[in-house]
Image 1 (tube, rainbow, N blue to C red):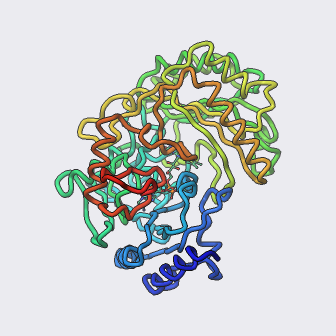
Image 2: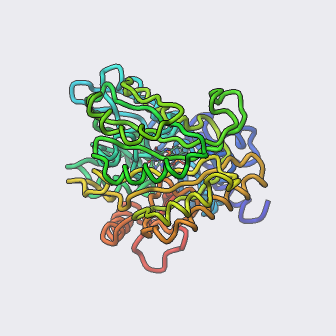
Image 3: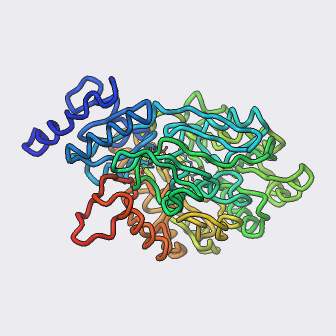
Amino acid sequence: MSITTTLQHEQAASLRGACPDGVHLPGDEGYDAARLPWNVALDQRPAAVATPRTVPEVQAVVRRAVAAGLRVAPQSTGHNAGPLVAQGLDDVVVVRTSAMTGVSIDAQRRVARVEGGALWLHATEPAGDHGLAALHGSSPDVGIAGYSLGGGIGWYARKLGLATNSLLAVELVTADGEHVRADATENADLFWALRGGGGSFGVVTALEFRLYDIATAYAGMLVWDIAQAEPALRRWVEWAAAAPDEVTTAFRILNLPPLPDIPAPLRGRSVVVVDGAVLADDQQAEAILADLRGLAPEMDTFGRVPARSLVRLHMDPEGPTPAVSDSTMLGSLPGEGIDAFLTEVGPGSSSSLLLAELRQLGGALGRDHEGGGALKRLDGAYLAFGAAIAATPEMGAQGEHDAQRLTKALSPWANGRRYLNFAENAVDPKSGYDERAWLQLKGIRSAVDPHGTFVGNHRIPRLVENQRVTD
Ligand SMILES: Cc1cc2nc3c(=O)[nH]c(=O)nc-3n(C[C@H](O)[C@H](O)[C@H](O)COP(=O)(O)OP(=O)(O)OC[C@H]3O[C@@H](n4cnc5c(N)ncnc54)[C@H](O)[C@@H]3O)c2cc1C
C-alpha cells in the first residue's frame, strides 16, 4: 500500500459504524463482493464501500466521509460504473443504495414512491397490479435512480417522453448531511437539475414519479435471419421516420451465443430483431406495423400483452454481466449511413458485438417537455449502440474495438450530442446538454455541493475557479 492509500485507508476507517455491517474497506473480507458493480468487467476499487439501509445511515456515511476528507459516489447497481471507475476512486466512498428497495404505489393519485436502490422490476410489478405502468426501460434490473436521473428511454418514450420528466419529487442527502426534498415547489432549482443532471448533487434516497393508465400494450418482436438485414434496415429506417408517436421500437442485429437459456430458434444465430410497443388499439397497431410485417419476418410475436411484461421484452441480461460498449446519437440515417452500419455489423462482417442497436427517437422525446428539467428533450433521430460480452480481457478489447468501429463508421451522421445513460465510457458530460442547461447545472452544483463532495459517473463540474479537474 502506498503512503497515500494508507492515509486514505485510515480516513475511510472512520466510516466504520456509520452503518452496521455495511462498510467495507480494502483488505476486509467483504470488500471484493461489495465493490463489484453490475458490469463485472470493471475493476471498481474505492477507498470504501458503504451499503446503508436507512436515511440516517446515509446521512452518517456522508457526514463521516466529508469529515475524513473523502468524496462520495452514489451508486445503486453499477450498470453505468465505467465513467466512474475511469475517474479514479482512491479518495472516494461508493455509497451503494442497493439495500434500499422499498416501493409503494398510490393507485388513486397514480404515483409511485421508491427508495434510492429500487430496480425497475420492483416497481413495474406492483404498478401492474393496479393496471398502471411506469416509464421503465428495457432492463428489469437497472436501478430506477440512475436511469431516472440520467434521462430514461422506455417503450412509451415517443408518446410520453423521458422518464426523468415524469419525476414528481426526489429526496436526497446533500453534502452537509441534510436530508432534503426537491420538487416543483421545494428546492425547485435542485429538482430541475436532478431531472437529467445525474448523481452529482447528493445520495438519492427516494423518488416519486407519475404512473400511467396503461394496463396492456400491443408489443412484441419481429425476427429475420441476418441475411435479411439490408431490406429490414432500409424498411425500418423509412418506417421509423414516418411512424406516429404511439409507437417506440428498436432495431438490432444480434449475434447470439449457443447458450441453453437462449430460445432454441435463436440460439447460436445472427438475427435481425425489431421490438417495441404500440399504445393504440389492436386495429390501429396492426395498421402501424403493417409495413414492417410486409417483409415476412420468420417470427412475429406482436400482440396485446400486459404492460408489466414489457420490462423483459428486450431480453436484456439480468444479474452481473461483463460488458463493453460504445454509443452515438444520430441526427439522421440516410442510405450511406445504412450501408456503413451494415458494413460493420451486417452479414459477413464477423463482428464480435453481441448486439448493434438503433433506438428510434423523435416524437415526444424530440420536443421540449413543458415544465421539464435539465434534460427536456433528446436531439436526434436514432441512438446507436454497440455492445459485446467481455468474459475475458481479450474479448473485452475486441468488443471495445468493434463497438468503436461502429460508432466511428456512423460518425458522419452523428449530431455531436450524447445520451449519457448510454455512454458507458468516459465522455465529455457537456455533450449531454444544451449550453444553457450546462451552465445552469454547474451553477446549481456549485450551490448545492460547494466543496465537490459528490462524484457522479458523468460529472457536472462546479463553477468555482481553480477547481480540481476531478471534482
Ligand atoms: C442492460 C442495460 C439496459 C439498459 N436499458 C436502458 C433503457 O432501456 N433506457 C435507458 O434510458 N437506459 C438504459 N440503460 C442505461 C441505464 O439507464 C444507465 O446505465 C443508468 O445509469 C443505470 O442506472 P443504475 O442506477 O442502474 O446504475 P449505476 O451505475 O448504479 O448509476 C449510474 C449513476 O447514476 C447515479 N446514481 C445511481 N443511483 C443513485 C442514487 N441513489 N443517488 C444519486 N445518484 C445515483 C450516479 O451518478 C451513478 O454513477 C441500460 C443499461 C444497461 C446496462
